[in-house]
Image 1 (cartoon, rainbow, N blue to C red):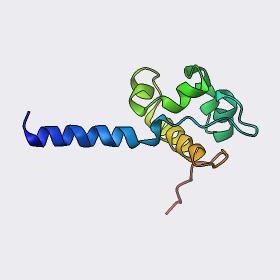
Image 2 (image 1 turned 60 degrees about the vertical axis):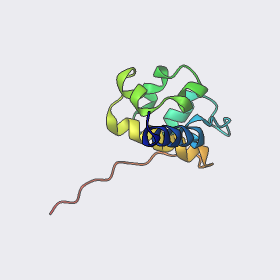
Image 3 (image 1 turned 90 degrees about the horizontal axis):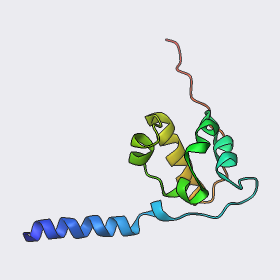
Length: 104
């Protein structure tokens, strides 16, 4: 390995360590389990609740696993992952409707 390869490997490792993806927040309020979280965010995500075995699994599963192992489509993956990050930051879930395109 040359110094460039070592440096890039170290940077990737540091970024992984500092990522919030591994933080699993406690349940709060009306959100006590995976189904209640998925129902609260809307967009038919409650149908995907059985794909996550536990609260910890929901918050530690990444996009690649959701795609390859669980078969979750891109739009729903992005929506779920964005809500997981919002929940980590303390925002209580609520459904966000899909914006309608304006007719020209």
